Amino acid sequence: WRVVQATLSLAVVAFGYGGITSYVALLSRERGIRPESLFFTVFAITVVVIRILTSRLGDRFGPRFLLYPALAAMPVAFAILAAAQTRWQMIAAAVLFGIGMGASFPAFMTIVVGHTEEHRRARTFGSVIWAFDAGIGLGSIVIGVIGERAGLATAFNIAAALSCLSIPIFLVTSRRLN
Image (cartoon, rainbow, N blue to C red; front, side, top):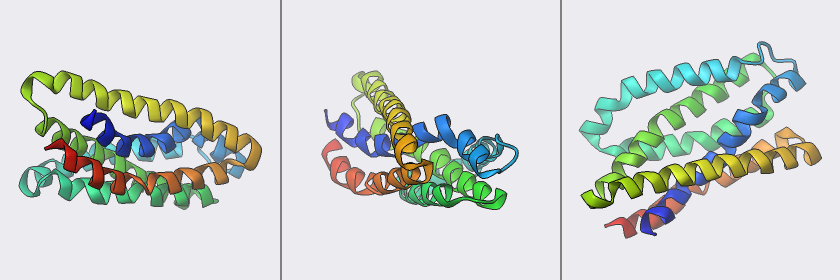
C-alpha cells in the first residue's frame, strides 16, 4: 500500500496524459493547428532525446534530481496546451510534456523499486503501471466529459491544476517507502 500511495503522484499526471492521448488532435483541429499530429510527433522525439540526455544525470545526481523538475514541467505543459492557439505554443507544450514524461517515469521507477524488497519488485512494478494506466483511463473519460460541456481548454486547465499535486503527494508518500 505504501507504493500505491506513492503512485498517486504519477496518477495525477497520467490523468492529463489520458486527455492528451484522446483529445489533443481534436484540440489541434478545433484551433486550426496543422498538422494535427504535431503534438504527438514533438512529444515522442522529446521523450527519446530527454531519456538519452538524462540517463547519466540520474546516475550521477540521483533520481530525485530529475523527478521534481520533470513533475513541475507537466502542469506548465498542460496550461500552455489549454491556451495554445499557434503551432509554436503546441510545440512548447509538447516539448515540456515530453521532458516531464521522459524524465519522470524512469526516475519514479528508480526511486520506488529501489525502496522495495527484491521479492516484491514485480508487485511494485505492477502497482506503478496500474496507477499510471488508471490515471490515463480516468483522465480520458473525465477530460472528455469536461471538454464536451466546458471546452477542452477548461479540461486541460483542470489537468494542469490536478497535476500540481504530483510533487506534494510524492513528498508525503515517498517518506513512507523506507
